[in-house]
Amino acid sequence: RDIVPEGVQVLPSVWSMRRKQDLVTNLVTKYKARLNLHGGKQELGVNYFDTYAPVVTWMAIRLCLILAIINKWHLRQIDFVMAYPQAPIECDMYMSLPQGVATWVGRAKQKALKLLQNIYGQKQAGRVWNEFLLQKLKEIGFQQSDVNSCVLFKDQIIFILYVDDGIFMSPSKKLIDETLHQIRNELKLKVDNQGYPSDYVGVNIK
Image 1 (cartoon, rainbow, N blue to C red):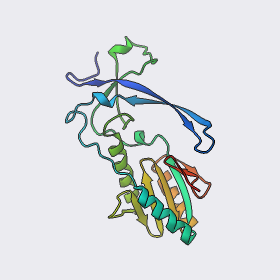
Image 2 (spheres, helix red, strand yellow):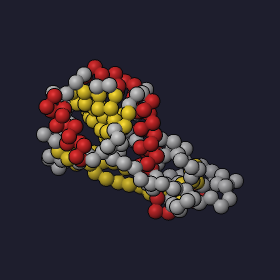
Image 3 (spheres, rainbow, N blue to C red):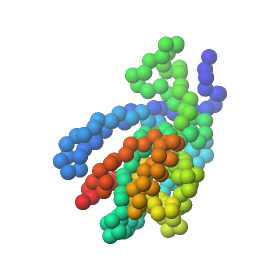
């Protein structure tokens, strides 16, 4: 039988392909394929509402890095793995099976996927992820800056956030390690252990 409730829209799925290049050498370092929802087919007030998601400004990034350099603070760059799907879905949504995927029962065109987690391509995906992550950070004691909501602080540690890329800075390396341990208990992330970031959100840093 049809698993999709009557009158509910089944949104198309699309594949997103890209090549990730090194900023200095321009060599391809990674090939990425990601399954997305076709957000262009969403309807305002039906399967999405607000879409705005804040990011840290470059003025704040520069200021924090300058403070870290002057005070000889420790820095640690982190990247959340498949960030958006770590957050729960905001409302019930259905997506068609992606091209190239078959089903054992019936025709693929007659089947649909019910989304259980936030997914790339949704108009509200960035906002849902941002709210989810900020809530997790607040649960372990972080506070948002009144000037920039994507600059957070806790004790002697500062965290700046640009979507799913972040930088921790603190005079205490131990404090950064302890904070990362707390975050790993809740979220999946990969850590750049090279100290000062070599590049951040597409900008080479020396």
